[in-house]
Image (cartoon, rainbow, N blue to C red; front, side):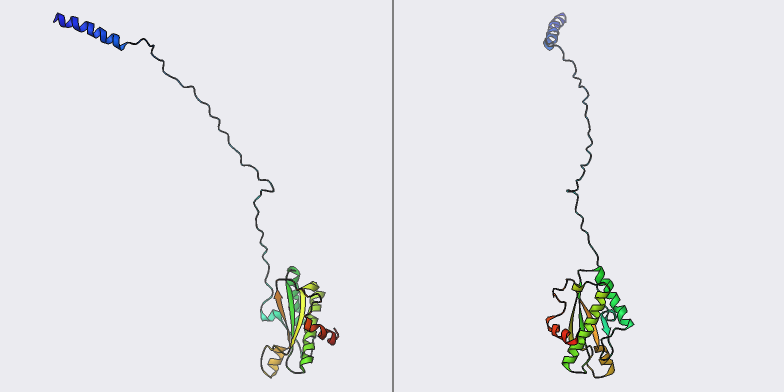
Length: 198
C-alpha cells in the first residue's frame, strides 16, 4: 500500500506539472462601449423645378341642350326677335362668354310657303339677327357663324299651322373649336346676305 502511494504521488505531481503552462493566464477581454451616433436625416426640400406637377382640370359647362333653349321660333314672314327669344339668346350669351373656345353656328329655317330662294334669304335674316344680338351682348364675333336651310330641313312634315310654326325657326349648333371662316358666314350664304340687305 505504501508503494502504491509513493507511485501515485509522483504521478499526480507529474500530472499537475503537465497541466501547468508557462504562459500567463490571459485576462478577460473587456470591450469598451461603442458610441453610435444616430443622425436623423431631414427630408430634402423639393425645389420649385422638382415639385410634383398636378394636373388642373377645368370643368366647363355644357352648351345649352334642350330644344327649348336651342331653338328660337319666329312669326310668319318675320325675322324679328320677341321677349321670349331674347331670353333664350341670353342663355347662349352666358355660355359663349364663359367658354370662348366654343363656337356656335346659327341655322336659319322657314316653312315651305314662299319660293325656295325667298325662304333661303329669310333663313339668313333669321340667323343673322340672332348673331347680331349675341355680339351686341358680348360674344366674340369669331365665335358665331350663320347658315340658312330655308325650307329644306323642316322640323315637322305637314301642311298645317302647327307644322309651319315649328319650321319657322333658328337653331344653335355648337362645336368646341372656333369657327375658321373669316367673315362668319358660310360661302353659300354670302350672296344671300347681300341680297337680304344685311
